[in-house]
Image (cartoon, rainbow, N blue to C red; front, top):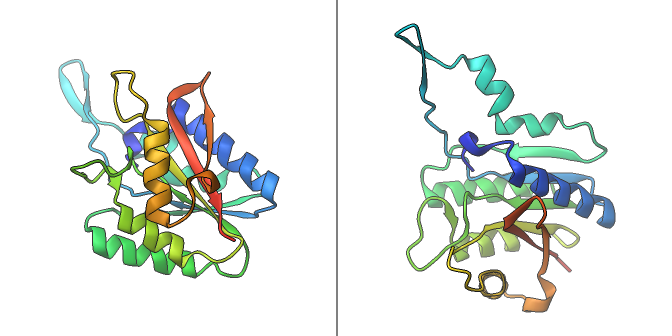
Length: 196
């Protein structure tokens, strides 16, 4: 997740879906694994002089941690450690999730793009990371996974990614459900499954 894209239409769908799932399943907490990669913001030019955007402006409009202040019965906790090294990140994320074993949680994997393609980049979750997180979760937790459209050529992308994620988690494809907000952001879906 890059803070440069925080609070766009996809976030409306994202947090709308997450809160509905929490309410439908009686889950009191959402743990956002943000795969956070800090953004570089451009500068302002005022009368020929260059200025950085003030930190308070960025904190208001582009701080992904702001979601923790959402007025809701559901508590949101953001794992916003910068994503620099995959192995270290996975280990830290699984320790973070393990700290919340007292009550059911939605564990929300929120990369920039989604599940790995043939040549993964930092904006993807690789299959073994998804599996390690799934294995860390306890019975009654729900995994929710952000998946951005994988192509712009009109080819099917939802079902292939759903199948890939189900295989990575070791669950039947039909156990992995799909949520979306096509009238708001039709290039993103969310896969979810409750651990039984």
